[in-house]
Image 1 (cartoon, rainbow, N blue to C red):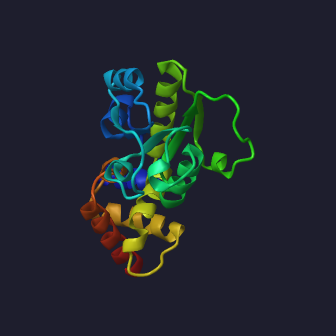
Image 2: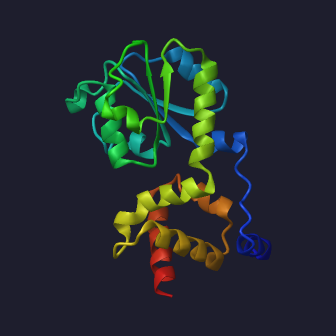
Length: 214
């Protein structure tokens, strides 16, 4: 604990998780009306945690809620929510879950370059692409997701509605770091806890409330 406190006080950035660690904690969801079996199996063989649905039936879908990265086919999805295509789905998902990373892919080369949905996309890929660009994109977005700053943003998005009063992000960040030291956690341990259930989110929210009042 003392080593961590010294690192924190000297503002040292914690070492990011290794690729192997990222593969254990990063959850990737594929939404495609035609299951990309080959791509899914290849990514699984690489060690990524991959789940699949043919369309999204609710923005509260458990697989969506638990995912960190969402891969969406631009065509053939969104029907269950009466959304024209993947572009609209992207916008709705990102507005509810701004912390999630989205990869939009398509076999159609021409799309509306003025669509507002493109502003919500983190990566765009062609559907015919080999495994390499998909794997590289997932790796890049996983690293971003579990960086310290992104982890704090993810935690804030997850618990802000549980806080007793409105707390701005910077206040939340400072309180979270203060709570981590008080509890004797490392930043790495805190980051790992972000991918789990509401009970942990509630615990973090309680710690932040205490820290802001102390």
